[in-house]
Structures are given as structure tokens and as C-alpha cells.
Figure 1: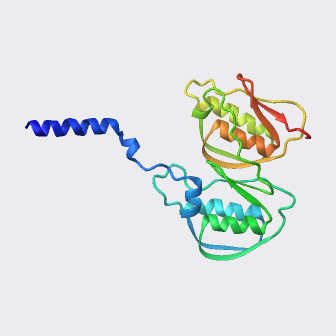
Figure 2: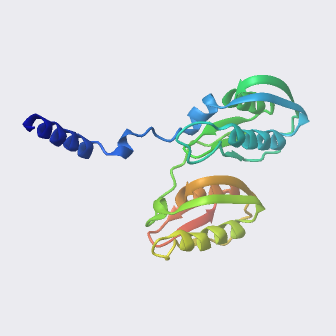
Figure 3: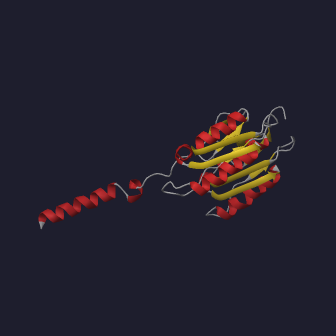
Length: 225
């Protein structure tokens, strides 16, 4: 009996030292999904890069079988550029998502960067930018952020209002746009993303600089705009 009690006490100690959450596998990274998701077919004939990226986005969500699964598929952010006008013609079978992405971007004369929450596609992707964290912006998670050719004002208003809805304190985060400049239209399709990360992509696509003074996020026209 003494031996059994000793065993149970040791098991309890071990369980306390290693909580169940620590034993569960981590959510797959974007790069792991690019490597593991296999596309049965990829067929384009004179497709635009926008059409190709949309196909990869939709199929990645349909075919994502990785576990555990919090966010299905891969989010792609296309920074549109006048040089990306080359039509794409591909006919592939049983190809990893990442390889299909490489062919699409290479043939379109573009490059890509893999971030923690999305793949950024552009003519010359900037080095990954770590947006500043204001207050509890990291804890405010947006289930969906979807814009199609939205203005900067529309995007910021959405993030500002939803940050209050999603904030446990209902205070949200202050976001201001400095006057001047001509922001580019914003197209995004992101899931389960923290506020500061979503705002960082909004700033990058609109060609604005994101900073904070400790009281609010400030979006300023980039130099030379």
C-alpha cells in the first residue's frame, strides 16, 4: 500500500510539473503548412497573380489536415505592383503548396516572405517588421480581418471598433491617422491575428509608417509620399 501511495504521489507531482497543454503538439507554423499541404492539381492558363494567389489561399484551407487545427490553411498578402503583369500558365500534379507558391511568384517576377501569420508577396518584400505593442494589443485577437480594396480610413475604423468589442475591458486601442499622403488601397484576408500584427500589415500595404506614443497607434505617411 505504501508503494502504491508513493507511486500516486509521484504521478501527481509529474502531472503538476508538466501540464496537459505542454504535452500537446504546437500549432503548425506557416512554413510547416507550406511544406505539408499537398495540392492534387494546379492548373492555370494565362492567369493573373491575383487569381493564382486566391486559388492557393482557398485550396490551402480546403486541404489543411494538420493537427491541432486552430487556423485552417495559409493567409497570403499580395502587395500589388505594376511589374506583376506576367500571365501564369502552370499544369502541376501532387505538388506541395510551398513549391506551387515558388513557381507562381518566380514566373510572375515576384518574391515572397514567410511571416508568423501570413505569406507576403511583393516585387521586393521588405524585411519582416515587428509592429510595436501598445497596451493589450497582443491579447486582442481578430477571428477575421477581410478587406477588398479598402481605404486606410475604412481599415482603421474596423480595427478600432472591433478592438473594443474584442477587448475584455471593452476599452480597445486608440488608432490615429496623421493627415497628408495618399494611402494605397488595402486588400487582406487574415484569420486569428493579434491587433498589432493586423495593423502592421495595414500600414505596410497603405505605404504608411506605424508607431506609437504610448497612448495611441499613429499611422504616418511614409517619407517621400
